[in-house]
Image 1 (cartoon, rainbow over the protein chains, first blue to last red):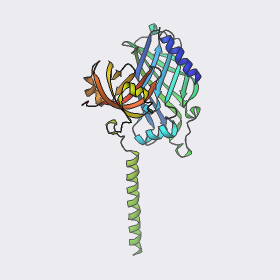
Image 2 (image 1 turned 45 degrees about the vertical axis):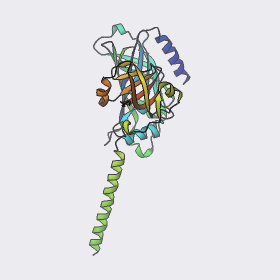
Image 3 (image 1 turned 90 degrees about the vertical axis):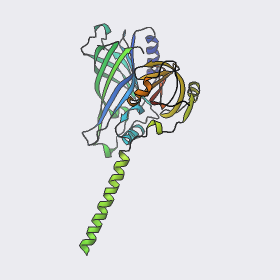
Image 4 (image 1 turned 90 degrees about the horizontal axis):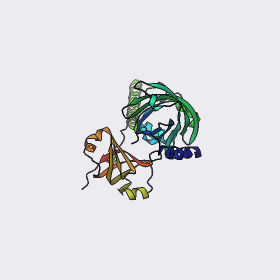
Length: 181
Length: 128
């Protein structure tokens, strides 16, 4: 937790003098179920993210309760029973895009690695993920798809629904970041 | 006679099963209440909103002037980010920087990255 606030402080201070790209309407979605009749999936269209183009530092913040499910009862259970979103309202990621150079980005996607700390339910976990970056009008586009384990963030899945809810959660993020808004 | 009684029992059991399934399905698939029909826990201006210490995920009504208009979002008083549903595009399209507006939406929380309060699913209200 302390690391996260320290990161924000350093990140925001550094950003004050650097070229930055940002979005307030990033799309983050997840699939958290086996192939069942009603798939457990949701999308958050209001994720925020900032990239410092000089260092490749990236920060992402999203509100758990902004995940939108097709079935409202599922959303209720997700927030109250699994994510405890009133106690842990945000999930964050702070890290660095390895070997990032904005000048070298082009219109075609290029794979990069991102190393950083993912924080869900107040629990920090170091992860390394792959992402695809490309240049877009006034900024860059970032796409990534990776898996996390529910148990890494102490998300308890009751035995009764263990065959419906997957232990491995698949997360997809699609952000179009433009010149600091 | 016994056959008829069994038949009636089976029919009754089937009826109960069908009714409970219907109730369960309706409960599970109930539509989310739209923001327009939800009760607001706060109604006022930005300064009152900031000092009010409102719980996240509450519905609020806010009267404020627009300080920026961006793609599918507005900024109020330079400290609040307002996002709205696609279905509200039409009504928000006419909003311009400097306008004083009255809106209802869900207060998500404070965004540490942008250092602003975040409102989503907002709708415009008539200010009369």
